Image (tube, rainbow, N blue to C red; front, top):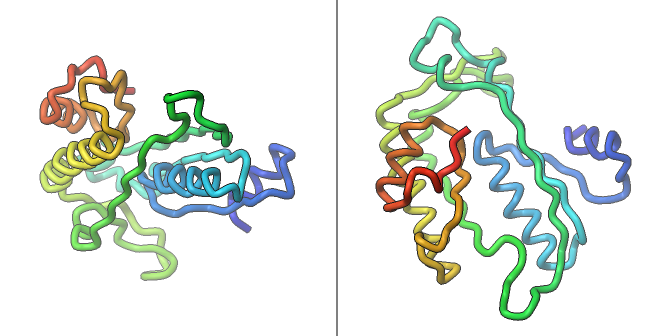
Amino acid sequence: PATATIVQKALGCNGGIAFDVAAVCSGFLYALGVADSMLRSGMAKRAVVIGSETFSRILDWEDRTTCVLFGDGAGAIVLEAREDVGDKPRGVLATRLHADGDHNQLLFVDGGPSTTGTVGKLRMKGREVFRHAVTNLAAVLNEVVADTGISVSDIDWVVPHQANARILDATARKLGLPREKVVVT
């Protein structure tokens, strides 16, 4: 069964919708977009979005270019459908999701049950991933800003994927955001 059904049972909220979204690091954002759509359409009144990864299981501990950069992590959010209050919109103001299969060989696992029948290890072309991440994180944030009609200076915090501090610093510089507005954990 989907991991979501196991969590659903543990929370005691059976009877609703429960499913997994598989999109690695961006899975949380994809799931957030799906949940937001379901809440807006009336298909659901509440949603729990949980993102988790256990990269430690697929790291090559002999490869210092990857094993020191990746780890395990999780985060969760509870969403509830509510009406806007006056001229202040509530909830997720905009979501932009992108994928580009042309870049699969920049960050990948060299195995898996469906391809080689092995666990496989994480592989990465670091410089290319860095360049791609900075360019695209800044571009997507600019798209969201354009969709919402706000400016970058209106943003209190950016809570990005915690890939690494250098990517986050470079993205902040590219956007003209003060470093203290970018959450780094």
